[in-house]
Length: 481
Figure 1 (cartoon, rainbow, N blue to C red):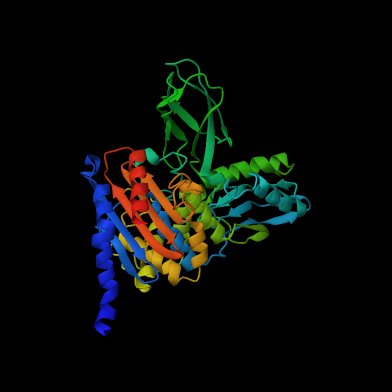
Figure 2: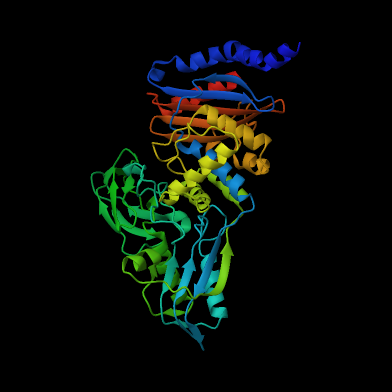
């Protein structure tokens, strides 16, 4: 009897694997466009810690944005769901009457939410807070400069494994010690008839010295294939593709090339509008370091500002799949890394994440992580690792509720608002989606009859449309539950 009791979970798992799940998975794999696909699937009963079904669950595949599950779970575990970023406004020198005989410094902590459109605050709220703090100190003129101090992270804003086609895009923005306005600008164009070049009108916010090489063409087919290419810290951006004809204010978003320098420039201009004159040219730590200028270490504080708590930051990250937020969290975790090797800010974060999960008993040998957001095509993970992590976060983590609620409800919100909509799983699945060229992934939780399941379905190298594979994955999930 005792032997049967011990073997029952295994027998149950085998039963489900062979009777319940395999026909569904066989149908999922049968179309010709799945012939060359790499697939990793697992469904796990969390409370009994038993596998309901799996298919090649140890296969390492590209997860795309599903990697954000690893990043946000790790951040909540290590930093706590009430963690907040702090940005401090400082000065050196002395305040003599109405004059600050010195510089103003913006010391960054890597906060990705400064002026972010995702937090609900208007863009310039933080600028007004800083300007008011300076004016409340009696300062009307500054003999020095506004200087961004972004040195908490290195200058590797984007992962070395990111594809060139993502560099310069609104979603491929770098993450730095100082970030501002989601590190994005909006480019406004005016288009005329077909086969002409569109006219560049402006950027919002205005990016000083940004230069656009325009290789766009206008078409009559209402097609939009425009993309922006450019490297970090470069003022050149290249515009390629086609845009629809006869648009007065056609818009496309791109990345701010140097957020730290831009913020110093932007805040200098903002102070001028607030009747605070700044004599010196705005700058940042990177430029001062390159010119062998040393930033003063004798600071006094004007004020400090704080991000939303990590609980909310993780929710935004997973709901809208915010790449900047995810990479900033990865680097922030890395600040606590101790390693004999000289590692980048990205590598420090990965090092600590793997070390932390290994210590909790998870096998990270199948986790290949080169960023926090999943844009790197060399990122790899297995369905097994994801389900193990999801199970741990549900049953053992002290921030279980915060992590669970960070995942959007399928068919209702976030990037999965249309996935499983109108089905019996609408609102009963909390899933993170991931997609890039020939990659589609979903992972998270399904609650069936008040019973939680960890789910991971990852597919690479299919040869159909994203719409087709999404529909197939919906059908697979519905057949499994």
